[in-house]
Image 1 (tube, helix red, strand yellow):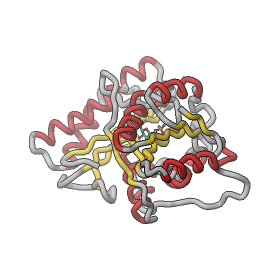
Image 2 (cartoon, helix red, strand yellow):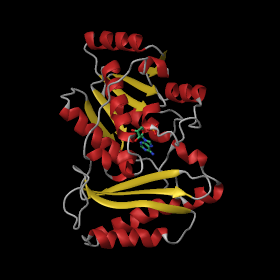
Image 3 (cartoon, protein in one colour):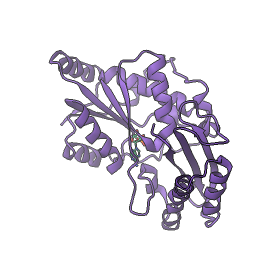
Amino acid sequence: MKIVLDHREMSFFADQYRAQGKTIGFVPTMGALHAGHLSLLEAAKKACDISVMSIFVNPTQFAPHEDFAKYPRPFEQDCRLASEAGCDILFAPEKKELYPEGFSTFIKVEGLSEALCGGSRPDHFRGVATIVCKLINIVKAHKAVFGQKDAQQAIILKRMACDLNMTCAIVVAPTLRLEDGLAMSSRNNYLSSAERNAAAFIYKGLQRARELHEQGERQAHVLKQAIQAVYAQTNVFAVEYVEIVNTTDLQALAELKGATLVAVACRTGETHTRLIDNIVLGGSL
Ligand code: AMP
């Protein structure tokens, strides 16, 4: 595996691969790699000739009070995991590489960015869309793979790629979970043991909604109440939102028809860790 720090060098390799007629599959991450990230790499390797994973903790998607400074950065371990998983290039630029002095261009996917997580993280998706567009341009990716774990992000990036006539396909891969159903996340590292145990309720609530949907329930308020009833069994985390929305415009639905995103966000009381999860009923992203 090549480790590339310089964006010009990354683009140079990408040009070489493209000149050889090879396709480039790309997995952007913020590092602290876990099996969920590696499953995206696996998907990129299956879909393309060359796999590139990036590690960059993107400052523009964190608000000043958020966890940018304390976000885990186990770089050597990440290099080992990516290499063992068969990654061809690990691209790990420094902040000054991607945001040099004078940087002043941002991408805002309007409408979609204000929904769900946008309520409590108003500039988050502006930072995400901007960095993903930049990384795709540098890596010259044919396909970029994202996790359903961050469903709103995937939906926003699909919209951006379409609106900006980007040639890179945005691919969404399933959420990998731990044994008790908790979605894998680099932020799970922050949890106390009591929080870690209670965090399993997050997916249990979503599963309850899936059961009711399978039994024919289509009223969004009934599914929402059922999820909230599961979450009421613990006081270890507070619910930020439980929303049932259309997968294309993220608008709230009263009645489920077609592919529907059931998305939740919670915050734990002790370590104030924000956890998100979702399922899609009646279709896929
Ligand atoms: P992050 O490093 O958290 O920015 O995530 C990088 C990519 O990995 C994003 O596309 C995430 O949606 C994806 N991802 C994070 N957690 C998981 C998971 N548990 N399963 C699948 N993909 C994930």
